[in-house]
Image (cartoon, rainbow, N blue to C red; front, side, top):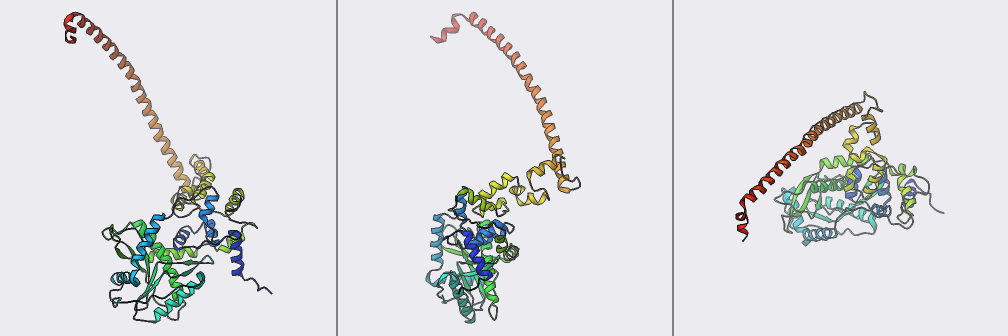
Length: 419
């Protein structure tokens, strides 16, 4: 007799149907979670990521392939640098942790490196939680967890995350380590790349806090993470402590605001499927059945950005111009509404957005009117130039005649130099 289906198993079955038959789920990583949290109002990304849909394959099937991502060269270089940092049991990595974050502790002469292999992500997550608990209870020792597996609940669905490393200090506290292949030049790195790394690390910190909260005595999860990068233009590792309290707070708040995946799934038509093997028309209809909230920032964070941008522009949505523009326009959601309000054809005159648009339209009309009048005056001046040129032509003609007369007067002497 089959077991009764619970709400959790029913949701997993529904998400598997959305992916398509025999389509393996694509696991979420910290980078995808950071991007998901940056656009919490996008139901399309929430359901696709929650169902484990490969958005890159989906975008290609829709005819709008994505063009961003890490190159194979950068991937290989990053793996080589990470292996160098973790060589010799992570001796150099632990030295950097001690130097940058915990100078008061005993130097890490040696460290425990527990084995974290297990079957499946659930097994690896359980093994990581056990290793963290054992390392916390064994006070006075350094422990390095190489590529642990963490789990974080995202809109009712677990997301499995794999940080580069987690270090357990002798006092039992935990530190996230991010290893990146972009360089630190004179002790500083590209702020944009550092910010992206901090947002990823903040996701790992949240996942570690969930594990810590389940222990009898919750250890401290440090909010200063270690960012390890190549020094200058060499392959030697250097590090910097990065405070991620702000990124952690923002990510936690935005993840909490995400619409629950089962609520989105319940609104979809029966039989909806996002398999890239479907005919383009059917696949497009399935994708369009889920509302999207496009913004220009999606171009650097979502594989479906080009598809959503085309649809946003076709519908005239003002969000395609940016979130700040959308916020300034209030209830005016389309470009057509904005132009109509600016021309006085619609809109409440007492609405600050409408009043500002009409004032801007008047100023633009005045500026264009002045330019047109100035252009007219310049046209008259320019028109006078041919007359001057004509006079010059007459003068030039007289000069030519004079030259002819001078040439006749010169006679043979004028052509003497030719001989």
